[in-house]
Length: 262
Image 1 (cartoon, rainbow, N blue to C red):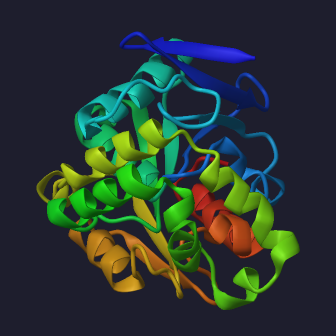
Image 2 (cartoon, rainbow, N blue to C red):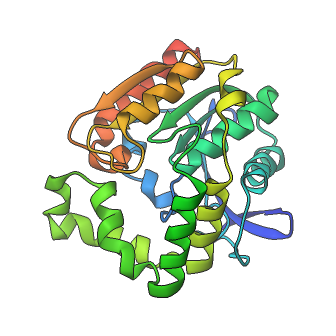
Image 3 (spheres, one colour):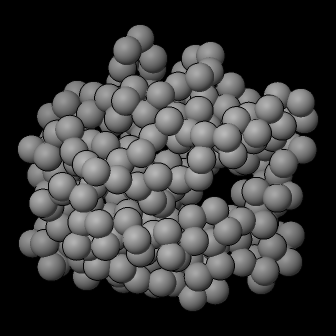
């Protein structure tokens, strides 16, 4: 098991594929760990070096006390890249992972070739909205909000199939409360509107048509800020890499070809 230490926090990292392969880094969403990408991996081009990591407070990474800030989460991703000694990375960020990607692209454009923004935005919600969620989490835990969160994560067909839904519910509810709240606080304080507008690298954005967290309009507005291309994935919610991995993988694969990464 591979780890990287960032600001005294141990991060769980996984690297798959050939050492000299083109690097794609995957950053997962709030309430998930790196396994959220498992359905997608078979539909990405062969020969890639795939880097995944559990952000702080999630998966097998350390869980320091909340709150966290986005600058620290961006630094964590930067530290992983530097520790692995990789460059020319295509960064694929889902939800909060997309915020991390935008922050990293603004801070260290020398590390990245291109950016894929999946079900995310330059600014997600308002500080008051996130504070209300944090207050609710402190009172009732993640379990108390799980149904509402899953309604935003998945389209009705997925939600109606317990055999498919249960593992994702378990992943969500087993996320450490401090880690979930810490990342909520980081999202509350993040607004990359101006820095994302200034990005010069290629950007592709996508959104599930039924996403109740970051709607297609929000994602398209973020793509428009930086002249990125935008796609809607039908009949999916906030995690299209889970519900429609083949279609999501095809879009990413085509983008990798367009930017000369495969």
